[in-house]
Image (cartoon, rainbow, N blue to C red):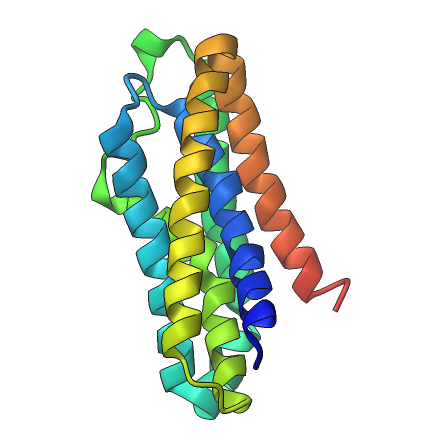
Length: 187
């Protein structure tokens, strides 16, 4: 597989990280550079790791995960998006703000955004593509897009307040629906 295809695939996978990190930046009070870096490390690490896991799993694993991967991503993104919408409608003093500083939240978001990377890794295994460069590029692109998205999201959140938390939740649910439609109706 040529480098242009690998880079375009890495950018495509990083788009989910971009959308979710915008939502994360929107919802965080006192969001700082450390938060952006931690989020980017999780997203980049999971994207690259899932691609590697898919590659290692190869043919046998593809049949098991391919039929449900879109449902897993849809469910995780819808649950978190719904929670964000609910909290965006409440007074800040009455709700626990959606907190990406919690490991559990970071892991759930990282898994939800990296399920497609698992499928890409499986594809690379089928094509007998060496995996080191694709995993590296997928991780780097996801890291960079997460930094950009969370920084943009923070600026939007400061300007628009709670309304952006609702919009962030809608973005996550929309992303989940998009993933589900791509794998069911549009497939």
